[in-house]
Image (cartoon, rainbow, N blue to C red; front, side):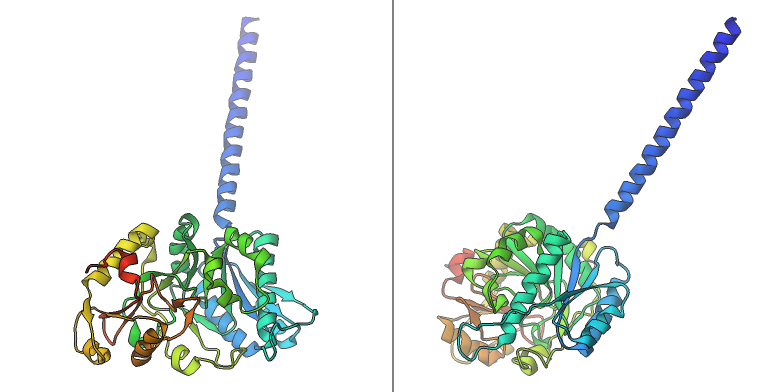
Length: 382
């Protein structure tokens, strides 16, 4: 009798042990499955905005896929087509690794001023629709926006992955851009250099869902990029931009009818240098750190005066700084160096605290300094 009780006890113990082992194995399997699901969560959607240029779209898609193939689950690609162009739709659908979205808007466009280009109104509507789809319906946490006339650099995806922590955690950063308006070959040198800017660069940029939730309800009827450059919209938030562009815009023919193309877009340098972004410490780009970092560069630069600042700058090896008194004075100096002269809402393109920085035919930097810049940087008496 005692032996039977012992055997029953042993069987109960064995069954309990087996049950526990099965539960442990099941939990482990579920955990691994959950981990796999977590790692497959996309880092950011990539949307290519397209309308009626199938040849341009193909060139853009091929460039993006060339570097996206190593990270397909992290960066799912979508083509957002505005309108019904059959060749654009056919081209987008010919890639089975790309999602296709189609914006069909039959509402008439009523420009606010006579002679305005209707396309700018259609573009603004398309952007709002596409970003609403990706953020609010598909629930992506980040979106990278491209257009159908862009090629990307080999480190395009690594660059955005590295800068995402700044975008997520520093509320003074509104977006990250892959573009530098003064990124022409003669004005750039360092592939690792990044800057903060008060001017929205666009042309390949990443934003978060929380920012889009803020922007979507008040999105403008037209000229969406210039709208983002208004102080009342960006509210003193800034934009991260590289010294050397991670996108190249080849779109000579489009809605802007080639404006600026020959002088400013065609000579842009697309980065081809290897940068190990995973090992880069980007802590210097946080709001407080960058102010000190940038102020030191400006303070160490040699001040130049007089009419022939271009000649002086060309003959000095180190960094130099040149003061401008107002917008017309800035435009005069910028024209001599052949950088962008344009301002939006009181801010020159690429400027940080009124300072526009670019290289000049070498590694030396030129700093164009606004009337309030040194005070804002804390170096007024230097």
